[in-house]
Length: 306
Image (tube, rainbow, N blue to C red):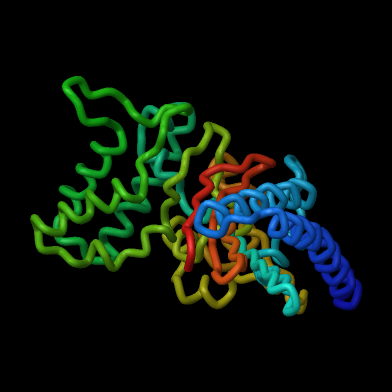
């Protein structure tokens, strides 16, 4: 497909998204007229309606089992905004890829038992981080992380990261880092962009890192490619001027030439994203976020007035 046809296709996709989002605007206006009570609770009701409509739109655009990189590129590159000056209506939706890093659950040997290369990758990247950011006591920090990932506190320690259990949260991860920093006076642990290397969400045994949108930092660490090379060439070109290489092609041209393990990295973009939505309600602006993955919505969080 030449550049003109690609541009037309992207423009049509944008129109489809904008048209569907207009449904949200109608629902927004209707509920606002129906609400008599101002305040945080009413704003939360408003947010729940927007959340429901937005996730229905995502299910329509990104159904389970179908990957469309052009639509994903467009959504990730161009935040969707609708506004009406007369009514004061405004909604802004911005989504980013969700599986850009290694699931922290892969640091659990029991979770990764069936696919041991998951554990190997996760530990190798952890050790790469320790060296790159000059962590003073790498073995101590590694032991604390692995112990916390694999166990829960209590009289009898039990494995914690099973397919149905909760994962080590970012808050718990930060607590490990803080305790280590205070004990060893090592500020370097807070210089690491951990979210570029690991994701702190619940995953299933079928989960993979998004091979189309993994972070430049993880790509560099996992495949031994200089970070500046990755940052220069691994990007989304929504205008279609340059075709983005597949992960396999990128590694072949810039790295060791190895083939990405499909059990670790998907060969196509995943319908897995983290979205944040801002909206105007009465005299304020409010925000909420959620994760969307293969027609499943989770981790809804209402931030209140901003």
